[in-house]
Length: 144
Length: 103
Image 1 (tube, rainbow over the protein chains, first blue to last red):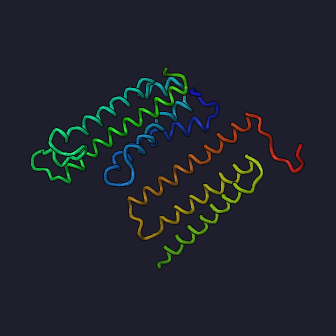
Image 2 (cartoon, each protein chain N blue to C red):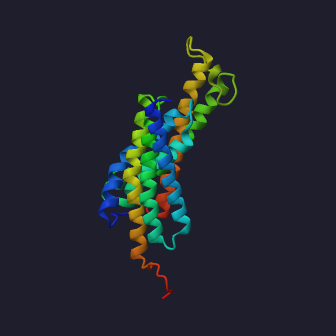
Image 3 (cartoon, rainbow over the protein chains, first blue to last red):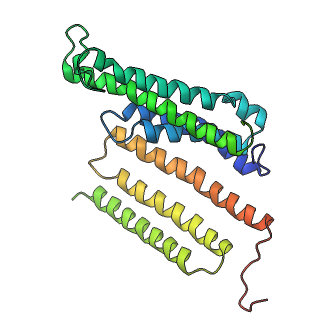
């Protein structure tokens, strides 16, 4: 399933497109709190940037760029970051994910929500990226 | 409506016609190779024409134009490669070609 794909055009195209796919995933994640996109869609596209080399390029390159342990690690970090950062407003007396109550100096409430949800989107993106990579690596037999 | 917009609208119309032809080909052609042939060429050309035509519209500023050119570039690179991989895999799996008389 993984390893070098036995066709030159597929290998070359995968190698050329992979960085752009990953960059587009980051763009969608960064767009999520004020436009179409978000952590879920962006995380999936970012994961494609890790899975395309696994499908088409030599394993040394693919697993050198994103190692097999990265899936579980990224998922763990993403879920924990989402939970902890989501619980932060509760400590400040607000509702779950309502960052208006986390006062940072003189920053406006709308601005606080904007920045807080951006961090939450990044955490969701990390969790989805990790889940996708982990599912692939389990199916490919690289992780038990 | 300026002349440039008219040219853009004409290009978009021709592109949509090519996309419709590729959809008809996908439905009507008999086997994987003929379908891949029809879809790969007609759909790529249709996408180039539609997005190239959209570039000529006056509402398109620089930021949107960059996105449209990126769509054209990546579909021109990725579309034929995907069809190549599918047709190659089918060939290596021993999928036969369509003949008028069932053999």
